[in-house]
Each structure stands twice: as structure tokens, then as C-alpha cells.
Length: 623
Ligand SMILES: O=P(O)(O)OC[C@H]1O[C@](O)(CO)[C@@H](O)[C@@H]1O
Image 1 (cartoon, rainbow, N blue to C red):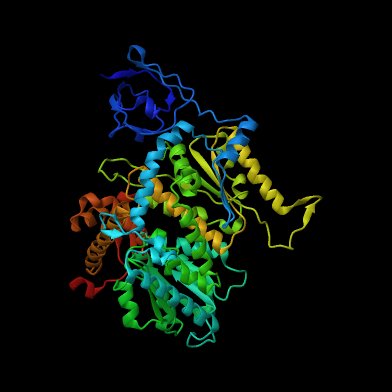
Image 2 (cartoon, rainbow, N blue to C red):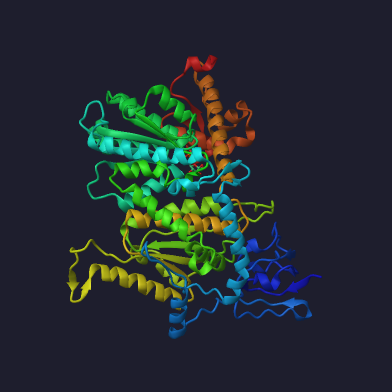
């Protein structure tokens, strides 16, 4: 029987208390987390709270459902504040990986022992899922493929000997190629050696290499890297202009697993045009990283580019940092890629341990579940206190959000899962948005990334008695952590000794595994991205409509005299009256780029516009 909820206040429902119950409610009721209720959410009526979610108790709450009345008040969870009890919690839960010099502190996340016990069987299932994955289970049912990024750092783990061979051969080829490029054995036609890398790719084909370049490239790398990761023409022009005459000594690496991503294709075409205009032969300076037989692979083969490296079907874009995608660029910048692989392999071993307390990825996943109620109710703010780790949050944004942000769970239930990730670096962000984190809306938890080594040995100095510049950075991290906690804002701290290829490899592996475990806890497929397709498809439709608009305008512009058209007329002649808004946007964009001319009116008042093309393309008319 349905209970009635009388609450005009913002509330946080405790899923365990309300689990499985139905409630009458009025429009006054606001759900702080609408995803806890079944869809769609009406303004009046009955809601059903999804059963069987293991989540935190909201404490203290005043839920009284006597006489069918449920009054729920919102209070932050009470976190332990007694210094001695906190110290005990810190010590009891501190995770350390000795060989990696990595620590994980989850003491400032307030999960209870009861929660931990309840999650234990689900974590054991997650470990089993991860084990199956590593053994080659089809973990991506709708794409019918294995998920094997773990094999990249331990090829012997792969379920087939030929895969082991492929991974090892590719690594050898990457190292050999990088050596030859750096030594000048492989060189551009008109220069002694390559000095620059221009990497073209997007998403998982860019974010890892960008993060690693920022984190690990030496001050004077053998080859400097820059990226084209968008189809923004001005952005592309900027990169090419920055290269200037060094285009002659630029190695262009085109990275695309599918080999057909439009942004990457466009970047390639733009760069090839720049090469032509500079009188350079692109094929002598181009390298492809892509799946065998993709469009990009075939193009590179037919055009005779310098080399091609494989992207394996069983490595997803967002987990491809330890494949050729990340390793080739890193090796060319003089980064020790075998150390990166070692760091990742060590972390992989550590995160296979089935004792939750000794498994840092499981601890992370557990904290995420606690902090977000297992439904993404809070955002993950990632704050590395180290400039070189600036791009870690952006890298994690794709890894976490593209993996976990799913509409349906594995049983087909609509769940709209995910965890929002953002952040830049500390202490810089302290002067931007930490104010809100401390005092404002409580919709996040923080992950601090701490680096113990401030500078290479021998370079430190005290800028005031007893205090270095790095002490300030340390102080700001600790201070922010304390200040947030004092106001019931939870945080995790990951600490590494230094930013090295090994620790960066370990961090990548840590988060890859945490995402895998968390995906299992919330029962979603972390290895596909069906939502991305919707945007791609819609973009394709816009471009198709633009072609029709152009054809209609061309026909009218070829008339004598030219016939400027209103938006309604264009929409009518395109047989797309419902698309008039999009047609308006297409015209406004074309007009801003001098490709359509406004004969009458202005874009500010769409109904007034009459438009035509500056030139009549007769060939187009009869095409
Ligand atoms: O490497 P590709 O195939 O060009 O894809 C780039 C990115 O696009 C996505 O598929 C999303 O569209 C990401 O998952 C991927 O990393």
C-alpha cells in the first residue's frame, strides 16, 4: 500500500529505508537524486523506490512512516571528527604499495563497517568478473569482443599465444621505430632528423598521450609533441602555424582505432593540405596507428606512409594508453615506456588481490559507491597537486564517464548510471571553485593526488626560514583536505613518491581497474559507448541537410536574376519544413563564413532573412 510523503523540503532518501516501498507524493517533493526512483518522474502520483541498493544510511534522519506519513529531513552524513578515532581510521585503512611507493587513504570517506560488510560479496563478484575478463571472456556483448588492455603489460596473460606474440612484436617494433627516429636513421626527406610530432586523434586516441606528454616528457625531448584533437579549423591552423618551417621535420602520427572518426579524418586532410602547400610529401612523414584494414590503415598502406602500428580490436580507445596509441608517442619523446608498463603491471597484480582492504582499486570503487550512493549522486573532483598531472582529471573524465555513463544496466533496466568527473589541479583550483566545494552545494567528493617529491634532489631551497615552495603546495593540499572534511565533504587521497613513468603507469592501471570493478558493482557494461553514436548520427543528418540546402540555394542563385530565398522557401524546397530551425542555423553559419549572402534582413530576426549564394555552380546544378 502506498504511504503518503509530506515533505516540502529538499530531501535525501535513504534507499535502504525506502527500498521497495511506494509513496504518494505531491509536487512539493523534490528528489535530490531522481535516479533513485523509477521513471518517468511525474509531478504528482506514486513513486516506487528501487529495491536492493546497498547505500549509506542518512544519519541522522527523521523518517517516520507511522500513520502512512513519511517525513524525511536532509542532513549530511556525520563523519568521524574525533582526532584520535580519525587517526585510528587513517592507520587502519591506509593502503601502501611498497614497490610502487603509492599510498591510498580512504579514511576521509565515511563508509561504515556495516556498508563494507554488505558490499563484500558484491566485490567478490566483481573480482570474479575481472578475472573472467582477463581470461578473455566476451565482456562487451553488443560488440562481441574481448577486453584485454591488461594483457598489454603482461602479454603472457592473454588467452591466445598469437595475441601474446602480437603484443610483444608490436612493443619491439615501437621501441625500434622510436630509436631509429630519434637517432635520425628514419628521417624526413629534407632534414637530418624529425624534431616534432603532430599527433592527430581524438578521445581515447588523444587523451592518454596528452596526459603522459604533460606528465613525463623531459624539458628537452628528442621530439616535441603537439596535438590536433578536434575539427576546429582555427585550432588546426594554429597548430600548423606554430610548427612553421618545422613542418619539414614533423612526424605526423594519425591515431584512430576505427580509422573513420570524422574529426581525425578532417585533421589529416587539413594537415595533408598544409604539406602540399609547403611542397612536402606527406607520405614520407606520416605514421598510422589503427586497426588492421580500417580506412586509415588502407589509406596509409596505399599511400606508402612510413609505418603503420596496430590497434587491437580488444583494446578500447579509453584504455589504450599502454598500446601503440600511448607508447609510440611516449617513446618518441624519450619517455621510458617499459617503466610505464612495469608500473601498470605491478598495479595490475596489486588490484587482482581479492582481500578488499589490500586492493587499492577495490577500495576506490567502494568509496565511489559509498560517496555516490551507487547511482552517481555526487561528482568526482580530481585534484592533482602537481602541475605535470594537470591532464589526469581530463584523462579520467573519459575513462570514467564514457565507461560508466550508461542508460541501461546489463539486465536491460533503465538506470542512467555514471559519475561526473572534473578537476584541474591544486592549489590553482583553490582560487577558482574550492569556495563552492567547501561552503556551497554538497554534490561531490574529492580525490587528491599527492606527489611527495617536490623537485629533483639538490634543487630545493627555502624561500623563507624552514619553508620551501613545495611546502606551500603540501600545506595547501592538507589544508584543503582538512577544511573540506570539517564541513563533511569526503575525500580520497592517492599519494605517489614522484611523477615517473612507473607511477604514471600505475595510476592509469589503478583507475582502469577501479572502473572495471565499479562497473561490475553497478551491473553495467563499461566497454561500449552507444550514447556517442546518437550525436554522431545527428551530426551526419545536419551535414546531409546542409547539402540539400546548398543545392536549393545554388539552383536559386543560378537563376537570372538571382532569386534570394526566405527560410520558409528553403525549407519547403528541401522538403524539410520541420527542420526550419536547423536550416536557419546552417544559413547563419554559412553567412558568418561568407559562404551564403544575406540579401535582406538580418540573422538576428530569422523571419526577415532572404539569402542567396555569391556564386552559381553550374556543375552542382546538374549533378
Ligand atoms: O580511435 P577512434 O576510433 O578514432 O575513436 C576516438 C574516440 O571516439 C569514441 O569512440 C567516442 O566517439 C571514443 O570511445 C574513442 O576513444
